[in-house]
Image 1 (cartoon, rainbow, N blue to C red):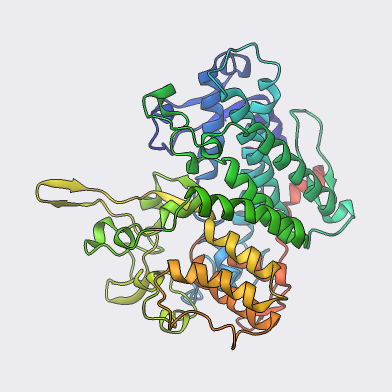
Image 2 (image 1 turned 180 degrees about the vertical axis):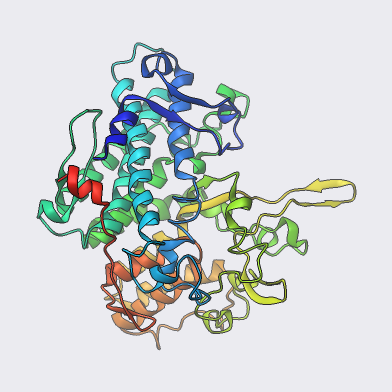
Length: 477
């Protein structure tokens, strides 16, 4: 690993550029604090955990590059990348270009830096003599384990050819401890194994997560620490992530099982309910729920998102536009998602999913939208996973897809017809269509194409493997 990682394995970086709605995140920044001091109180553990989420919100990570930035560019999501655009070379998979390589190198270092911070929490929590409130110790530990798994899995998806190789040369370092020693790579297959183990352990730790037990938590309890669980890698987000990992590793049996845990809870307990039409398509555009926030199993609260999207979706005459036009992408006129393309600076069909509105005053009352949210794992993905696992029985798979489409405003005449979608290939084609519609500006389309081994996109031969930094090759072996 880079030398800078050694520094961060000893010191916990806690940067609070992102502040969630909870009081427990409303604290002053603490950087390079001695670990022993930081972890001498429960509040210190909470701060350190919040610091991991905060690190993930940077524009160099999930605030841009891992969502609507370079990862959506190489998925050929955008059709408005000109020759002078910062992503012009990335669009053509020229990863060593001078305007592309620094972005990729920073992805590597940023993700491992966040992992180092998660490892700091885990290194101290079991040996801590701190008396924690209620179940907080296990919940904090569970989230830290899940974060470590989440970050390693995205490194695997970016920097490894596949999830099956047993060659260490094809893999990445799986860093699960604080050490001054260089962490050498392990094979992709071993990375998957360790990701699943971390997620399994996380689920055990989260056995008393309020989102699972159904315990009501007030904002006054423990300064609201356990409120807004979809801003955390909660129990169901862990199961959803596990479904995603198993699907990537081509273990459809386990992928289906994990996804159904989420779907069953959604159906039986109304957790992560489908977005309400009145919230999504409110006549007051300023307060529309543009990301369908109730469906987020896990989302990042990014307070700087307004700044990050400037020049990409707002405050620019050359915004990112989808390569497939909305008129082609959304064949059903009632699809809620088709309403989030608007005209800006005389440019039409600008994706407005990530527009950040300030609200509107109605009858003397300020109404504010659900904003500053970047979806990381969605309920709909669980339905797509199960549909793909069931595609050998097309009618069953179509029924799952239709549940999502119904939630998106499709009427009976617009839903998929099992008579026409009557083969596994036809089901897979509809799933691809849904990934294109559902995950605009969220970075998941690239990984879908990679999992499906699509060789060409938009006329380009795809390179699915980002190059590791030169320093990692030199020092990390």
